[in-house]
Length: 66
Image (cartoon, rainbow, N blue to C red):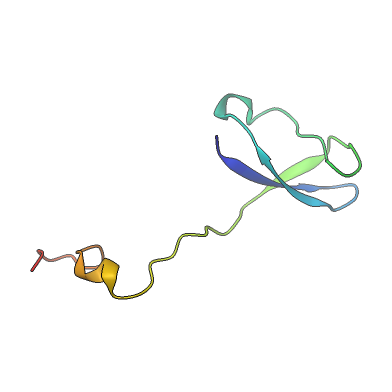
């Protein structure tokens, strides 16, 4: 199940919710005030390729592996 970040339009609280793909269209209630007027936010991914290890494995090049 993906984690979605939500923001309440009423109290401006931000929170994360685990939601199955089959229920992504249903309204999500705010965990702070209980209002059903929340919006889904676009969050930054926490995935980063750092260091030299991933590059020598061929993930950063378009050529063939050495």
